Image 1 (cartoon, each protein chain N blue to C red):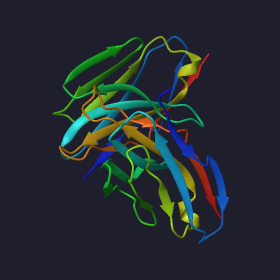
Image 2 (tube, chains in turn blue, yellow):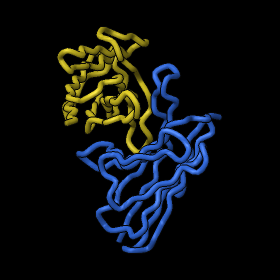
Image 3 (tube, one colour):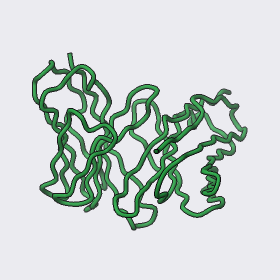
Image 4 (cartoon, helix red, strand yellow):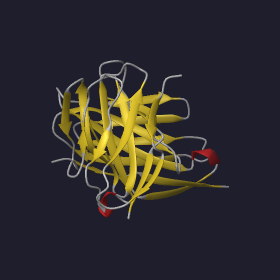
Length: 114
Length: 111
C-alpha cells in the first residue's frame, strides 16, 4: 500500500530535549516536505526537499533541521524544542510532473513541548 | 509575497450545493489544489487546476481564473460526510515545487 509513515504519532516532551520525528514514503517520490498545522493558521511549510541531499527552507524553518540522505526518508529534527513548537506536524511527498503532482500526507505527529 | 484567503467557516444543508471561494497572490504560479481534511486526520487531495476553467470530478468541481487570482470549489448534493475543512493551496516556482496553503474553510453540513 502506497503510504507516508510518520513516527511518533504523539509525543510529550520537555523544553530543550532533542527529538526527531521520522518520515518515510514507499512511493519513490522525489519531493518531500514538512508542515506544521496550528489553529487559525493552517498548514505552514517548515522545510522541503526536491531530492536526495537537496533541501530548502519553507516559511517557518527556525528551530528545525532536516536531512535527506535517502530518497524514502526525511526526518525532522528539533535540536532544542521550545513550547512554541507545540503543534501538529505533517510530512508529505509527491512526484512533481506526474499528473497533478499532488501531495500525499502522513497521518500527522502531535507534539507537545512543556 | 504570498497570500491565500478563504472563508473561515461555512454552513450548508444536506443535499444542497455549496461554493467555497479562494483568492491568492503569488509569484510563479504553478497550479492550484484543493484538499479535504476531516477532523483529526491528514489532508487528502481533491482537485487540481493549472489552466483557467472548470474541472469536474463527480460531486466536486473546481474552477480557476489565473488573471483574477481566484478559485472556487463547488460541492453538489451535499452529504453529512462532507463536513470537513477544505484547504486551498497554491504551488509556486518553476524549479522548486513549494506549496502554500490557505488557513482552510470549515464546512458544517446540517440535516
